[in-house]
Amino acid sequence: MLSITTDYVKDTGCPAPFLEKIAAAGFSHVHWCHHWNTDFLYSKHEIRQIRKWLDDSGLKLLDLHASAGVEKNWGSPADYERLSGVELVLNRLEMTAALGGGSIVIHLPGLEQNSLFRKPVYKSLDTLLPAAKELNVKIAVENGSFAAIESVFNDYPDNFLGLCYDSGHGNMGDCSGLKGLNRLKNRLIAVHLHDNDGVSDLHRPMFTGTVDWNELAGIIAESAYDKCPSTEACMRNVPASESEESFLAECLQGCKKFAGMIAAFPR
Image (cartoon, rainbow, N blue to C red):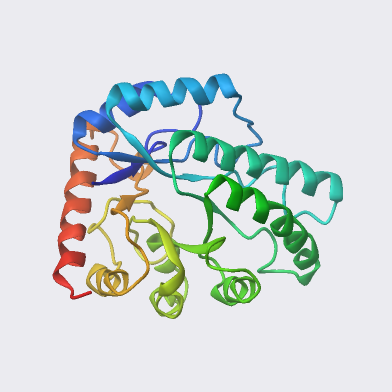
């Protein structure tokens, strides 16, 4: 079991050709990342077609990156924007349930920078909680400010909110991501695995930058995470001469290597 993001080339347009290549490369699962930063609402017809594409290619949905929203922002102080954003997240919860996934990934909008966002964020989470439980889909908060995430985790149960650890984000700035992950490893339910140079969010394949993969593997081995490695590498920072097939092969080998590293640690 190994997973890759659907938007390794682009995050809009028809995903069918990319799903075929993901399956041909040897992946078993996908992290659905199309339209993650748009206000796009998936209709039942589109969801039905996506399910057919997944079934036809032999792929399964691991998890889904819910939209951060542009004008439909579930953390907005403007209530009409917030409610529209809640509708957008609900759409992704329902889509994930229909496709057989177990969690959606969200960012905490604004909460890290401004306490003004705390009330609307909590109002939205209060609305999303019963829907998530009814659909049996958890919400994974992607790492930015661990202090903000810990604050929210103190107020919501782990059967509703968990952590998504993005190894690229955790390797930037003061590079304290692994320390934050170690504190919250009992809430880890999703991963975005990719590499960078410690400065820019390059989304390079694993083992091509400065992420400490051995330390990360040890923490994940001790964590609540019980799913397969899932890479969020993409082609935007690879040489133009590199083919999709060679890129996917490199990503697959990185996932296999990392799975072996995790397995080597006692649980």
